[in-house]
Length: 77
Image 1: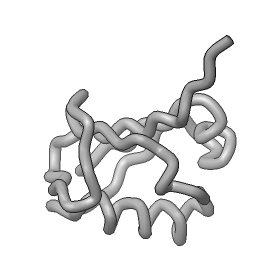
Image 2: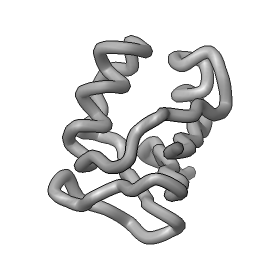
Image 3: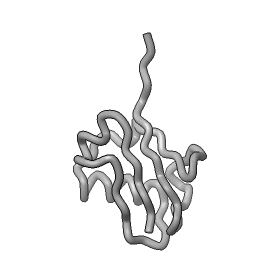
Image 4: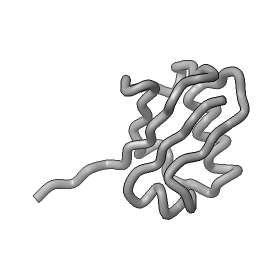
């Protein structure tokens, strides 16, 4: 299982703060596609992904047991 954590407005889009996916492995790009189609989360190219607290790119592999955090852009003031 892969745990996906949502932060800020992504929680509202997903309707929850976390989901669990039953998959052995997939790329970050495949995860983005799955989140868009299954949960209606848009603009994922503007979101940072972290696997087990390490920033990830589309080609990185997410494996069973990993935790993926979706981190929206931060603005300061």
